[in-house]
Image (cartoon, rainbow, N blue to C red):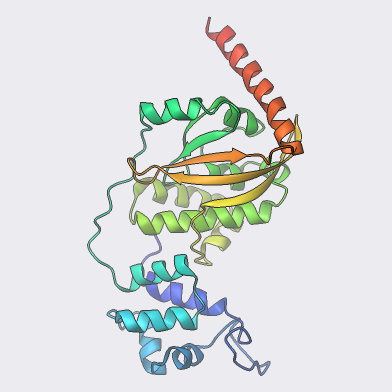
Length: 281
């Protein structure tokens, strides 16, 4: 997906993201790099500049656990980013099962039972594998409710739907980075990455940052074309029986305007279902 020496490119992207002041280093104003220099990372990690340079250039491929931990601290990596660093720096034979793209009947039944909240199942490549009526109604303004990345980057409606489109885009790319790290070489992830990179320069630029951010929960603000603004909370629940799948659920604060909006969304979902049944009969 990223060619040779992904480890080196990840190191460079992370040091570029650390301002010298954050690392406790002076900024002389004459820098040729946006963040830390190689010698500064080496100093902070307690290794030689030559050794760190060889790591970044791919000429040294067997760093110890202690060295990786020191570099993670020097680069101010959070848990997700540090885990990715270790995965790249100390690769082991993969014991992870292949991602599952078929949603179990039991999970569909559970999801459909959530009548009052939008719920949908997302796969490793951010494909929407199944959705309840509330989720279909929530995303009804999009041309297709099929892949979250395609929707965000290739459907013009996304910039109307997401009040903070920039954040939604960054989160989506960081989540795909995390998924691609868990399932290296996955053909569906490769296909989605190739398609959207070719069609969206913004996506390609965000992908090049190497931000690894698995999406687990967050607050969101949507602007629905028929219901208006919704402030919701998002939770992603891992489906342990199906690797790569997450059950995504949106909830509203009790007594909030979003909860009232969910009532309207429920009516819209029922109307869409009635219309669908009429077409099929």
